[in-house]
Image (cartoon, rainbow, N blue to C red):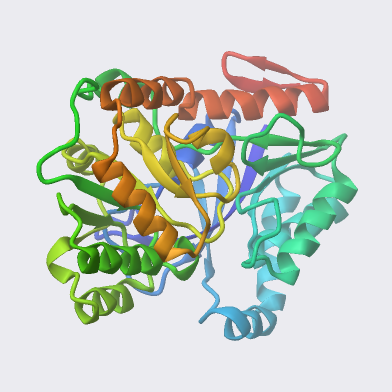
Length: 390
């Protein structure tokens, strides 16, 4: 079976002509490719090379599209201006495929859904944002979720990134998100018995964009500094994105620059090395489905201070179970929680063991197997030696 996967993550070529991308996207595409005989990846070509990238699946045929320019209204106008070209390119690849996979919310991903439905192709849609509406939810997000509800079932496998006891909607299933492999789990040997470091260290892992709430974290660090909290922690910001310059300026303007280090985008091995010297992670997203960074932390036996968005309540659990929850966008509440973590009684070894145990069964291999099982069940097929087979 031939898969056409439509991706919204920007990609670029290195000096050897290999296509790269960052975050968990390349790893998830490799895992997804194992379910099919052939794979075509329709990608956004980044205007300038990125850093810390990983190769896309070697055997995948790569079809680059011009990346829309700008953000918000400017981006919408850019997509509208390039619409004939986008439609032709997507239709050509979808027509040749047996199955279409698209990750949304994404303007190009939404076009892929519509074309696949019109061509009556088997379809896998993964909604990667917060299924529950938040202050960041747009009209396009609502339209996308409405389409998923309307066409769920039969040849259309609809998946919402998250976790819950009840399905997000009839015919739609929850699916966790991850970037950790079984090999990483085997090779990672975190020191679960250690307590809080001296000085304590916290890390943020993820894209530096507005919806990730890193500015809220910097405001919280300023509050802790004004209050004279001791021991005062160090913070490492891991990742890159359009807001990096503004965030570095904010740290300087608030006087917290000496406590915050921007490490940039890191490869997986370097990420593990840095997290080995960290006590906990802070993920202050304003909106989220199921953050891969939660599991990146857990596999290293690190609890997470997270905004109560998306699946965070299910993943982090009750207060102190695998971390702590705060209201999104509330820097004072985040500062108060960090103060409690630093000064309150915490059974760190037990907490670290709970975090590690949660991550061990949520690997890329398990993620792909879950997708394969759901597809095979709806399409009345089988999974033979890891591949979906008619």
